[in-house]
Image (cartoon, rainbow, N blue to C red):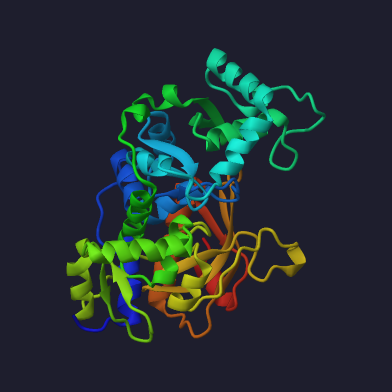
Length: 398
């Protein structure tokens, strides 16, 4: 096989993520499920200045779709919620892999909590057994704590530990709050699944990562599922012996690129110059294409970081900086806010990367993307407040 250019790697990764410009039929609930299977997880986050991240990630790939479909798939048992690279929605088909062992959460620490808080754990479990669907808000505070993320009640902490231990599962979310029930009631088939070895689970997560990234450096594999580097190294050695992974040379890399054998045909086509092209879209900060900031820097040349934890005075790009994908490049970022009552999709600031040429093609594509995103948010009026070129803000606004 020919040596791959980094441009080819970018195109292959974009296509593997479902962000290429291949024409798509109108979105369906089944397409939501298929997209999750393709990227393997949707990271959950509560920030909602625009649509919350899991819904936004799907919009970037599917365009106009009904966000309720994702909620319905969770309630129907097609998805489950658990810790992957972070707290995520995951395909129910992968439940056995996650049950195989605490890849991220330290199992001993969880078991120790259970041993140190037997009465609290049993009281919460008895409540769930008796009443079924349970939220943290269903418990009155007995310890003076307010509840919530910053000051959790004891019962809230117990629910989360029991969730991580696998004794409870999330049946659904109500106003984005977890609703828990017993694992055997949420997923009664869970006990019928065959046991999976710890090493087999990690091998599977490495294979999933190769499918999701197209072609990747070994150092990028660990981040996708938040695996430890030593586990990834061991998995790659096992998988190479089984001919379950392949390698390719990439221009400018001093280590091989890894790929899944199922993508060999696409990789060979890209090496011959047939590189997938991206759609023009906006990406959540928690989109799997960009959540590995080192990969974004090395492959796409963008220095990207979250600024929502920073004091406003220290922010360079805005509270919720959203990358812009265009022609297989991250050409800039914008800071959006959906004003739902007013029907306005506000872009507080638009920043383009150095060297990006503002021509008619870019303006037309970006304006269409902003309008589509605004319509999906049901905030159809687009207002761009600020850009490096004042004329660009005016051309992109309604």
